[in-house]
Image 1 (cartoon, rainbow, N blue to C red):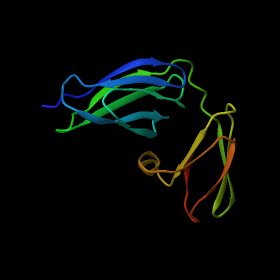
Image 2 (cartoon, rainbow, N blue to C red; image 1 turned 135 degrees about the horizontal axis):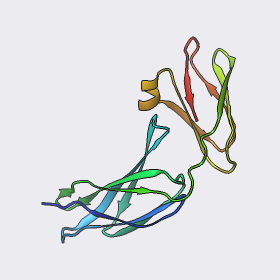
Image 3 (cartoon, helix red, strand yellow; image 1 turned 120 degrees about the vertical axis):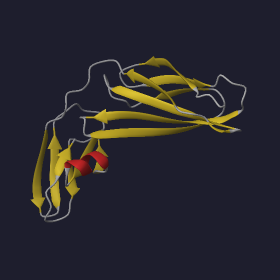
Image 4 (cartoon, rainbow, N blue to C red; image 1 turned 30 degrees about the vertical axis):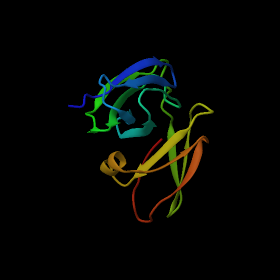
Length: 163
């Protein structure tokens, strides 16, 4: 039986998490697959996937959001097959940024100008869809470090926007 890997949180800050991965077995490990999950505004779950080569590993994941819960899951790729998943949870330190205040204004039938307030020097994600279900499961999206973005949409549809 292949055991799950051990995920140990080495440190965390407002915008990063460092963790180590190891196996408690003599089975040869060729690498790990790590998923990092977090949720924005309870509407959209995000995921970042890391594919890591080698047996032992210390990783640092940066560009995270302050005071946000993250779930890290990992499995090992071994000579005998894939291991079961292991999970850890961590909340980054600091104060979570205030949610931006979004305004969306139709420019014409296929373009919407989105603008918002918020801190400078950060990356914003703009998500939009024609229903709450689509906004949660598979929204259209774009990122920018600006405070406005023109989004192209289908004519004769109503859209929901989230930044």
